[in-house]
Length: 426
Ligand SMILES: Cc1cc2nc3c(=O)[nH]c(=O)nc-3n(C[C@H](O)[C@H](O)[C@H](O)COP(=O)(O)OP(=O)(O)OC[C@H]3O[C@@H](n4cnc5c(N)ncnc54)[C@H](O)[C@@H]3O)c2cc1C
Image (cartoon, rainbow, N blue to C red; front, side, top):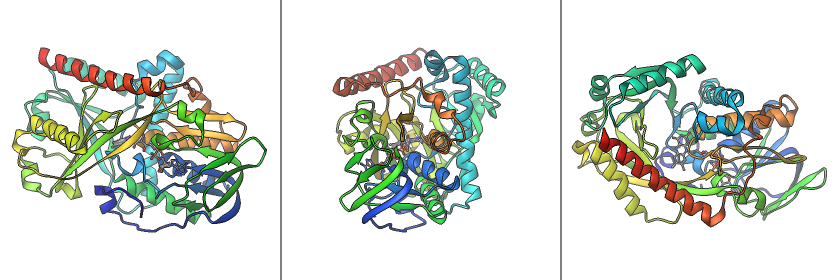
């Protein structure tokens, strides 16, 4: 299997290996990229009666989808105000509701398909590192009224009962959000595609395409797929195969570490199974995994190759800064993954030319949004809805190349500095 060494690849429930594409095949739709976006699209097309082929360069879930934090919660990689500024209030409202539909899709798929090892655990709590309980209460009330979200305000005493850290003040708990083992989830969806007659080819890097004729072709080293429709869902691993898509995204790395097994020590700090995120704009997130025996901690972004040991040092500094009692908790493994970001921070979803679709750029908030992306692209291809057009205002605009990367890193550092000032003032 072609996975980096992660907690998820070490705890796979299904170890099926799929052969590479060999020879020439024909189908209705060929999907390039076997992450959550591609696999969800292929699943929905298979459910709609299409014959699909998925081409994945490595193993399915090799990219961000098989390495992420596992948090499934409403929203996008940018907030409703920003979305509203580009698409208008009404569209922003509908898009946010669709992000909740994405959360429901993941939950329903795990239970409907009885996906082994997806391990959903209910509850995600966002904690505040400065003292503004009124602001958080208002936020929770508005989210309930506007979107029907099931948010519970937690006061400082309650937060500190569950998270033994003086860094935290108030919190808000989303009862309908949850966290999962993302790679086992993805592999469960893949098995369902195959049960419905779809074909998934691993170690099948798409190296050339011909997209202008009615029948399009995608070529790998081992063969060719001919189809009426092509979907690009190559995320942060998008290369020059489609230069227009490549120009429209920035690959941004982010990091996760998992600790040794130490349930008693971890319980001196964290007594909830909720996923936890702090509400800094450049914040961290963490959750217990392995039945509560280990801590998974994620955060930080870089736009250039960075030293893994330096990044682990930074994540550990965050962890022990929040929980000094965890200073002897050892890190067992760490990894990084690439996210695709567009300039507007929203997913890029649509039909870029007749019969050629894209479903990408989900940034750091992809578990629910790839589900909705896959759904609306499949609905569009099947002629069932035009919901994908809601994403039209977030087009394939140039992401800025190297200058865009530098700007993204500078923005992140600026957000970190702002977070620091805000906490210092509190
Ligand atoms: C460390 C980390 C933590 C994260 N935490 C969270 C979280 O807790 N919650 C959340 O909602 N989101 C999180 N995200 C974001 C989320 O994982 C992504 O937004 C989402 O997985 C993107 O899915 P995707 O299918 O678009 O891309 P990917 O999963 O990256 O899939 C793209 C696939 O395309 C393949 N590919 C590329 N080029 C070709 C080609 N030419 N031919 C064939 N195949 C090709 C790649 O091998 C790859 O498997 C995190 C991301 C990272 C990296």
